[in-house]
Length: 528
Image (cartoon, rainbow, N blue to C red; front, side, top):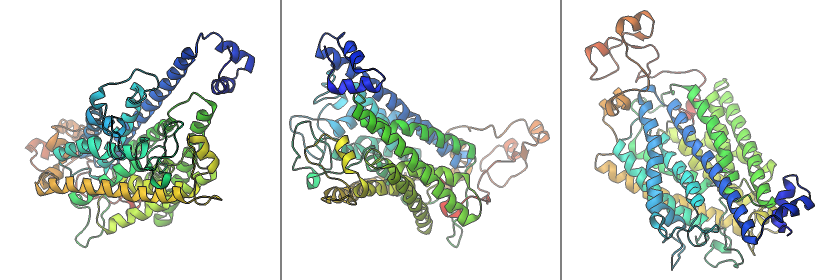
């Protein structure tokens, strides 16, 4: 028995010659056996990449913890784990169905089948239903979209309001965007079912390309967080009486770096994994190209933001470098598979400029985003989608999608311009959907008095006021602490402490005594 051409390519790429590959295939008694091997290979690929994507959750946790004050660390870590738990339940019950469900009457707006995994398919193709790996990989993405806004509203958001938004985003806002863009039935989708001609419902008979979610994930999370930060208002003391920003540095650059490295590592599952299969030489090449362009764009973004920080403050700022690397990753996520390496450098470079510019705009508008997550994910995500409309290479588009009709970047010869137009409409529509619905949610919570914590709780810190403790051991035996230099007397900063607690504090206790730290970019707030 000889190998099918596509499987032969895979085996030869793995080091076997044609004779050895055919000999291996001869051990399989039927085509179904070969299909089973390919199914197992693809399943292992998606489980591995899904696990890498979930590692990013740890990166977000470290990133958020490092960029805020120590008295709110427990709160932000709890919220990060909460996002994973809530998004799993919501994606199981309704999210996956709204995103990918194909019922008797599929439509372009929303999925309508496989609620709570009903009629789940064990068929390797998952036709009409879904595979186990489909759910796991897509849930990891849903958890990412849900946790992005946490950094935007950190240190003053009501816990119940946070829980409400987590349910709403993972169960409704995000799955609808997924259906539009990543379901073959979605009106913005670039996908087609194999062998079928272009659908009239695909926008401009093209649809938009968003390979790994610059719009679906990053715009959704970033713009949700932006509206939350705007409506909840800035942290106490973030702006002085004249409206000028006051620097409020995070308590641990070490955690910021750790979070950045974890996210960098996880992005190699996020982008290469979005090829979804790895059973042919073609899919392997697409995944590898995505890894290369992701690396280059991140590097370009990091250097751009580092140099910009030096130009502003005459200091080589570590937080700005970390920001820029992540900005570069966001800026390439939509088109990592269809752009040249040199184009990836442009994506990261321009993304860095957009990020710094939007951080400046946010401060002028007095929008307090402690992690600069909305400029990074929301606005650089929009740039990434726009960029694909300019520089998606024709050969790479054909290689990546099984279509009868192709459209590519406007800067390449003979482009129809349809892809570029679809990218622009996609940005505007997704932006309007996310901003509109999240604004209604946050405005309703604000009118009900449930959006923000009290001033007293904000001064004390969420860890002690809401979670009954602290990540760090701020208070110990007063004699030992005083003798070892761990504390200093300061009665002015905390509220409702016991008499014993009021007598001492750690020397590095960062409460609302606003500190100026040399080297941190004042325009960018707190980074990340």
